[in-house]
View 1 (spheres, one colour):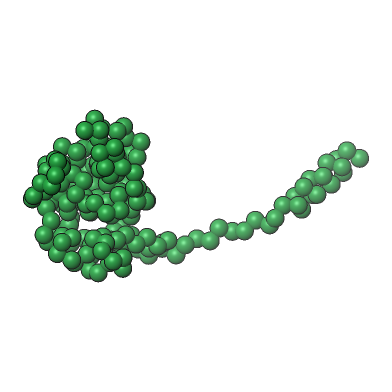
View 2 (view 1 turned 90 degrees about the vertical axis):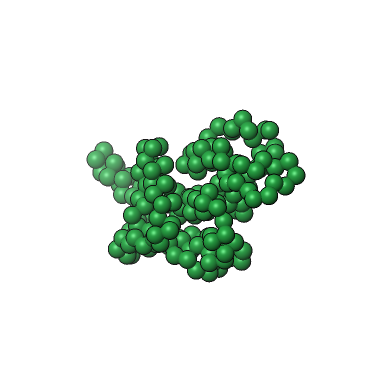
Length: 182
């Protein structure tokens, strides 16, 4: 009698569960890599920075093009679609690429790679000084750049801040730097 009772309870328990649904397997396109020569050095920096932090980043399946972004005023845009190659569009607006410094170009590309390869969202957190606390901010590609004309009391050469912003890109729990309160 006992085995029949155990079997009955087992059947009853299993019959109350919803039927398992197979997980759909997304269609995947073959890996593609297409990056303009003038952007490649910045992708290489991203790869090197990831490697230095022992992070396995798949940066060999990526398409970057210059073109028009769908968001007005955006200098870059990442498009992620399940099963498809991540695509970054860098704006052809001269104020986004041609007329900016190499540091600003690096910030822009690393920011977009942060979206596409690290899956990082925009962060609007600011330090007490008003500076953004992350390279993943929505509207400042010059967080560690130099400026042409100093405004007010702004420190014009922000290159010493680069290490913090890159550390924070790969590790959002990076400690707040000393200069963030100055």
